[in-house]
Image (tube, rainbow, N blue to C red; front, side):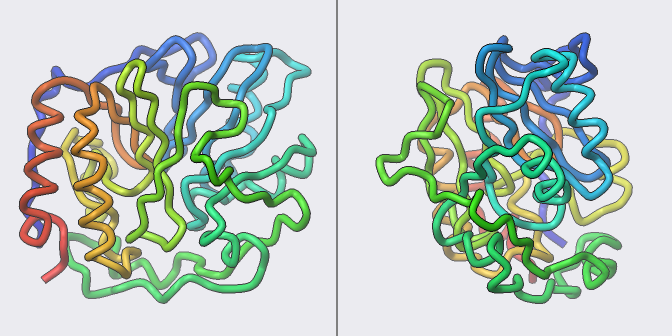
Amino acid sequence: MAVQIPIASGNVVGQEAADGSTEVRPDLSFKRETLVNVMFFGTPSSWVLIDTGIPGSAGSIKDISAKRFGEESRPECIVLTHGHFDHVGTLLELAGEWDVPVYAHVLEHPYLNGTLSYPSPDVWAGGGIMPLLSPLFPTSPVDVGARLHALPADHSVPAMPGWVCIHTPGHTPGHVSLWRESDRTIIAGDAFITTGQESAYEILVQRPEIHGPPRYFTPDWQAAKQSVQQLAALEPDLVLTGHGQALSGAEMRQALHKLADEFEAIAMPR
């Protein structure tokens, strides 16, 4: 079992907004959809959906977006950190209904254009019941067709001024994180997470901790280590991840550096 790094609860940030999401910046909020976080960035005049949650969460996402941005609004685009089932569960439905482009790193495209399935999960990753259940999780690709586009080569993020895209592979080949230097905010996807995703109990209680990427779905641990080290070096003030609560402050940074420095002992399965 991997070591856990507790983070004091005072480092949890965000307040519940009227739309039911948790607002962590004036223009950034998230909603936990059972297993995973979905992020909303922008204002009523221009907004972006980041990841699309698990199957069955489209209604919740549309309800929040209508309250937050307006009944008739639709996003400029959908940006994906990666293509695992819990991050693209409503992608086909929402992209089709809104008729908007979908952006992902080019190395993630085979999993989003129907070409390639993800590797089988590691049931021996340990740490709880979720690795044992992981063979039940879909690994087959989705196909969003002509709506799929590559994130720009200049690292900009469409419709997200001030943000840059950072390639953070390991959890998947084309995994990306998003970084805004002006307020030192990271949207990390699953490059690292802030709750234990292997244990059903930890998923339920959402105890704030810094963890490596979900172990049962991470095939390239050396790349994952380098990605965490790259993100830790940014010295973020706030981190919003694919799983867990948003965290901020010195204790978060200390724990993130500890994860980067001791990645093999803390994050990697035995």
